[in-house]
Image (cartoon, rainbow, N blue to C red; front, side):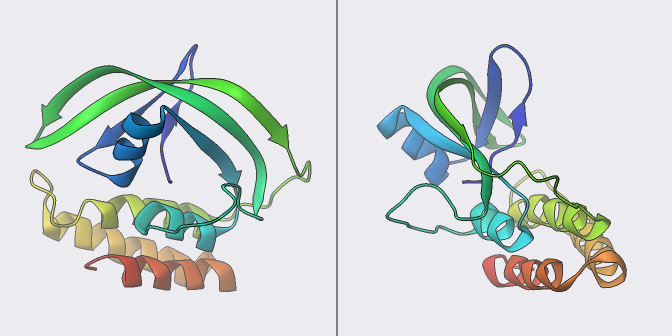
Length: 160
C-alpha cells in the first residue's frame, strides 16, 4: 500500500474512500509500512493492487509492522475518510545505504497523488491533468530509466 504518514507521537495516516488499504485496516488491524526508494515499486503500490506471498518488497530499505486504530472519520468533498494511529509492533532496517533521490522520483510521487484523484468528486480534472503533464516534463528532464518506467506505470494504473 502507498500511504502518506504524518510524523508525530503517535504516527498517523488517513485513508480516503473505500480503498483496499482501508478495508485491510478494518479486517486485519495491522499493516506493514515499507520505506522504498524504487520509483516503479512506489508507483505500483500507490495505484495498483499487488498481491504477494511475502509482505515485504525486495526494494524496501526498512519496514515496520504496525497496529492500526481508527481515531476519527468524516467526509471531504463527497469522499469519506478515516484517520488512523499507527503503533510499531516490529521493525527492521534492511539497507543502510544513503539513497540518491532526484527530482524525477519526486515527480513520480506527485504524479501518483494526482492520478489517484482523477475521477474523484471535488477534484478539478483539468488541474490534475496539468499537474500530471508537469510531472511528466520533470521526469523527462530529471528522471532516469526507473522514473520513466514508473511514470508509464502511473499511466497504466490510472485513467490518465
